[in-house]
Amino acid sequence: MKRVTKVAWSTIIIVIIVLIGVGLFLIKPEKEVQYFDASKINSADTTLFTNKDIDLKTFTLNVNIDENKLNTLIATNSDVQDFKAEIADGKIIFYKKVQLIGMLNTQYKMVFSLRTENNNIAMLLENAYIGKIKIANATVMQELKKNENQSMSVDEAQNKITVKLQNVKVSDAKIEGNIIKIKVDFSKYLKNGLGFIKDLFNK
Image 1 (tube, rainbow, N blue to C red):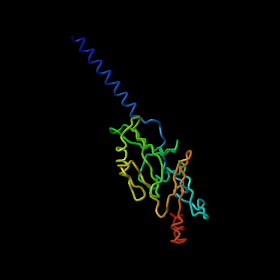
Image 2: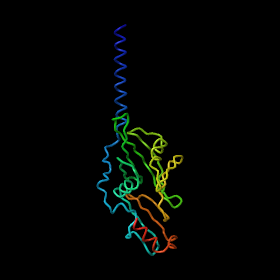
Image 3: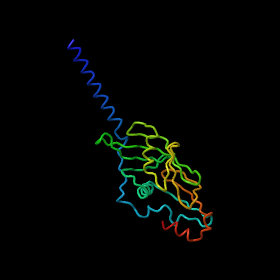
Image 4: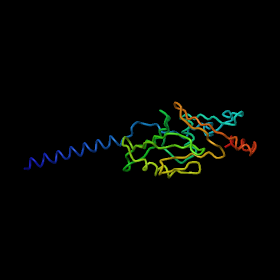
């Protein structure tokens, strides 16, 4: 009887160890990410629009945003830390460092699609993970809601982040390769005169 009890306890201990090992493996980040270093920000990337983007014939701006510029814009327009944004396969992939149970480091991984909506840029959360474990989108949206500001609104119910650009109309936003391409129409705002255009590029 004692022998059976010892075997049973040994089996239970082995199962617990295996479960802990599997749990730690699943919680571990999917891949090692070098988070964006805000101390190395290039000032040229902190402005979304530049005068070289403007087409005076059609009164449009064609803006190309690569990964470095995207990360810079996030860092300079929000309080988010320990993050990295990547552009791949027609999606924006966002990684955010998070600590579980005190010292256990892992990360959120969020996959967004991009579109235009009501003349603004809309990012739709398609999938969310913590480590390698898929989690409910609502869990991540609650965290993103904490970083909501004047330029970014978070709709938890629709898993949507809306980026609002003041005084301009976004006519198109898409991802081609590893570049975000945004087309901005400001012709309706010309009634404000050249002062508006000057302010646009001096932000």
